[in-house]
Image 1 (cartoon, rainbow, N blue to C red):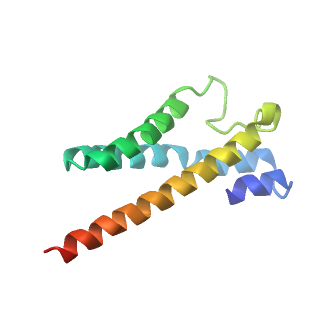
Image 2 (cartoon, helix red, strand yellow):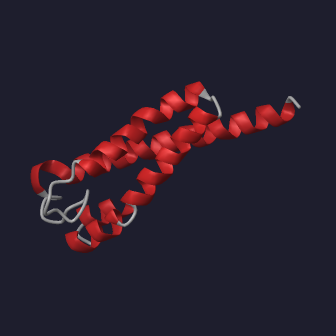
Amino acid sequence: IITLSDLECDYINARSCCSKLNKWVVPEVIGHAVVTVLMLISLHWFIFLLNLPVATWNIYRYIMVPSGNMGVFDPTEIHNRGQLKSHMKEAMIKLGFHLLCFFMYLYRLVSKNCSQ
């Protein structure tokens, strides 16, 4: 979010912004897929079903990068067609989702340990 807002305010150029953001796309996809599979294996159905659409979206977004682009975030296209605003909105939604998941995991951890 900070990197995208820096690009929006012209504090950094599009190429350095996109290279910083693209560096974290693959670890995000792998991490979210691993967490989703772990929730499936441990039979936490609600959390699995909550994570499945986000993991699917991350994988879809990574796979559908057009050939010739630098990655999910491309410096030549980030200012075109309002992509910067949509990337900002997506980042805010993901931040809210991860905060919700953090507190759900924390609640499950505390409630499980207190019942033992």
